[in-house]
Amino acid sequence: MSDSTPSTNPDLLPGRACGGCNVCCVALTIDDPALRKVQGYRCRHTLPDHGCAIYETRPRTCREFYCGWRQLKWVRETLRPDLSGVLVRLHYEVSAATGAKRLGVIVTLLTDASLKAEGLAETVAAAVAAEIPVYLNVPGPPGHTSGGARINELLSAAVLTRDKAEVLNLLRRARAKGRSGKHRPVVLGQAASAGGYPDVGPLTDS
Image 1 (cartoon, helix red, strand yellow):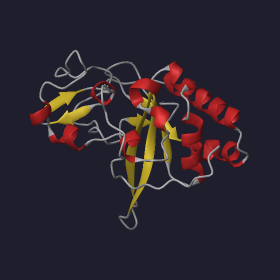
Image 2 (cartoon, one colour; image 1 turned 90 degrees about the vertical axis):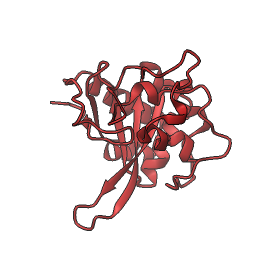
Image 3 (cartoon, one colour; image 1 turned 30 degrees about the vertical axis):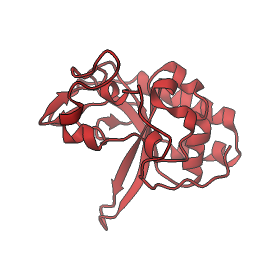
Image 4 (cartoon, helix red, strand yellow; image 1 turned 180 degrees about the vertical axis):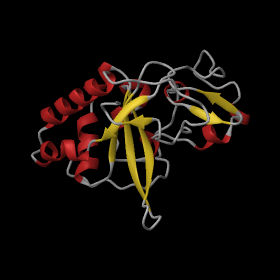
């Protein structure tokens, strides 16, 4: 496990570019007046080479979104979304008492193979150890809501003892639980934009 302490500076990292990755164009719900699509379906403007047919005029939601791999240096280089099946997003928690914002992350495991991604356990453990809120996101069928929950408490003991195998075991069990829950059709107008999180309920999704 890494000894480095993550920071949550959302500047774009040099040397990391989207390239041919367009996971966000498929995996996320976009609920923008200029473009509406539900998660799990490819955006209609996606080109065969994974480019965007309306890139120069793309809506603000798309223009302002960057995944955690592009912004957070403690997210391992190996976790580029299209190569790892792991999508990390920034998520701001707002204190009801003070209105203060606290930055956390949402980790979406897109496929069964995501659990084998190099650097997944280390990235999640580093955030948990630094007390950064970490949420696991488990996609439902295309067009349906996700299951998810905060996993800091679930992983805390395994992270403390640097037990990589147990971190991965707990992530595997949590993902299975999220997949087995009830997933409802996404209703646009109630769903999140690309950077939001209200589409994610408890891992039991009951």
